[in-house]
Image (cartoon, rainbow, N blue to C red):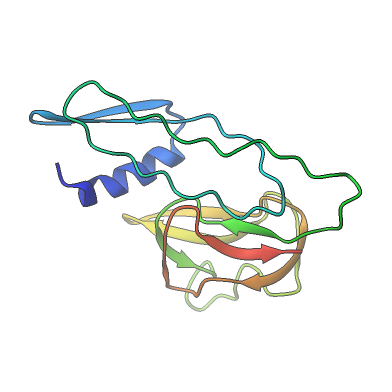
Length: 155
């Protein structure tokens, strides 16, 4: 089974409400399992993307879980990254001739659309994960991005 051919499937799985997926190709089987996510402190950046391994039998490799961390309530406001939800091509505007979704200095609210990622002719919205002021855009329009790659920084 070609690992590169599995990448789009893994990216689509990350967007689906599935907990587990088995894919077979002849004698080889790959099992993709969703792990529980823990709350991350605002000072942390995007978690590293999981890289599932192909298997030839029924063995399963558990996903690594990030440690549970807390942020003191009196801590100063720290930057938070908005990360790519999946692999694909980043679009910072709804169309080539339209203005960008957001600009540096804009105040963003949780759930506000900030970009699009195109993968396999499907456009997936990228939304703000926290309230804050847009401090920096870390990726360029039209750039290929990886899952969990930081795209924008909020302060």
